[in-house]
Figure 1 (cartoon, rainbow, N blue to C red):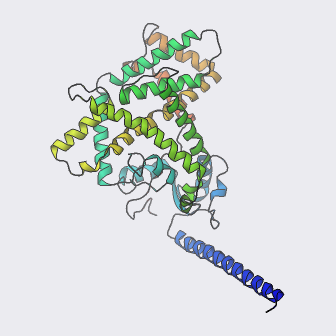
Figure 2 (cartoon, rainbow, N blue to C red):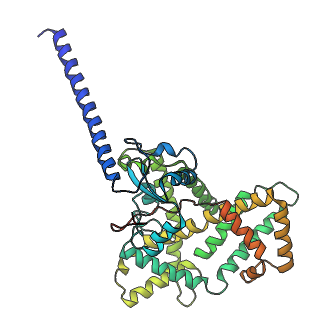
Figure 3 (cartoon, rainbow, N blue to C red):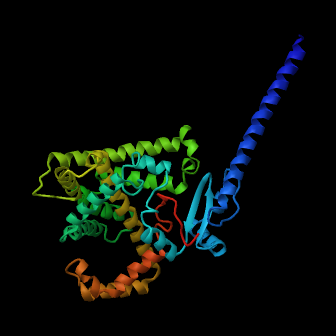
Length: 394
């Protein structure tokens, strides 16, 4: 056979192979799309979705405002397709209460989200772990530890100590321009760290700056979104972002583990110093009582619990304080009224206490309004159903 003919035959086979692959992929996409579209008939109503990308094209701006707009057309319960993942959005107080109060167990699950699975070391925390007997026991021990620690004035004392440190730092900077963000981080982290494992940091402390950097880097990565969270099959492909998340998680959990080990070595049941001590005691008490499944709660679970305390107590408080400072700066007349009420009730010789709350309705109303206007988690945490269920008669 001549060389030219052989080349033509090779080109023909290559073209046929490419066409076969292309037709196969297109057919697969269309069949998957049609299957999902038929399945939509059994789901709440929602907008048209495209193959592969689903409804992602809707979310170029703020997701919560987009969901509010979609609810006006499709109702308080509607469906979306985020990439290849089905999502049901609850967009009213009544439907949220029905799902999470009246049918709490039905909606107590968690979807599989890759980034959260990495952060939680394979679902060993409380916030992002799926509903199970181990999760129920873990949550019960955690709540018991928090209640045990929060009795009395423990937490208020930690807040006062950290606030006094921050005020002292500000005093040194009198007359100078100050970047408040780093001081807010220090204030909040010192409250959480001292409550979680009895440590207060200075501004130049290496561990403090490491925690703050990991926090900010995580915030940036999660804020940009992760494709593998929307397209789970991408988890098998090399990704610099996933590598960074795994590296940060290892470093972060290393700090949590070191503090946990130090607490185990110095643990004294008659002198519970912080939440970590209370968690260790709760675990030991459960072991002595012979509670089933206690052996499934490993050190990984405990360090993840400490991490949840940071996740639930740092970002939420930091963002709220930043919004409060911004709104008070924009509305000096509100700032003056809050200051006047503080002067009247608390004075200048001590710090505010929880017992002052009832006597300061204007200040409390201002805080609540800041939290309403500067909502830091408008979409809350994602949930999944644990069983087939209904909602709003759908």
